[in-house]
Length: 293
Ligand SMILES: [Zn+2]
Image 1: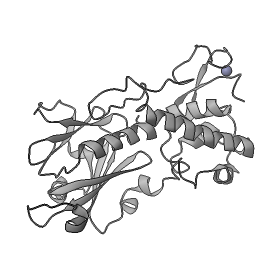
Image 2: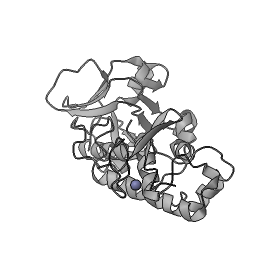
Image 3: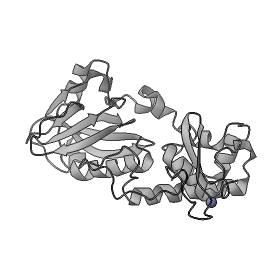
């Protein structure tokens, strides 16, 4: 599943590639990909003539700010001449990805939604397992209200709200493992299995530790480790292991080298002990029993 670094890489790609992309045609190939409005015709009508103006990310959600025009004579800068048209929100879930198509390649059977501009350049959304969703939130409605998962997200790992004091407060009475705490999107946004394991390794904390037993100085280290791991991964365009693809459809072959994730039975890069694996809340967890206490 794409996690924060992969979604951020996609966001940057969309922002770069889609300058001045105005939706002129939409083809919904699978109705269930449209989460809101419930009628796909409203989704198509609502997005028609929208400029995908600016892309934001919140946790694993991609949020495009939309602009629309009264007539065909679109002029720039759009800030001055266009009306706001709400937001297009996307969650890629397990296997969703975008592909930018400018040579009319026919869609594969996993294509879910196709957006075209006036030159027939296509932004194609492909999703093998089909858990990904899109919402058009019209002007005046709040994305946080309509999309429950978005409204309940905890702070961004890079924000100043995410710090050791905050962590101390939220885990103070939690008997759950620290690994499951990190996966909880209402506590911190954007961290999934790969980056939870890698951050805990870097911080020297066992994923099985009962959250409330973790001391302040360890939480400071954990916060720093999360930021370090995520930043490094964003810099390298995501990891090889995630099912993520960038806009060219590449499956990160330049990805981040992991220390524990999917290294079961291999030597720890610090101590030489073998990396172990066990499930925590149904998720494969990788760690070094010697380096992580
Ligand atoms: Zn080790």
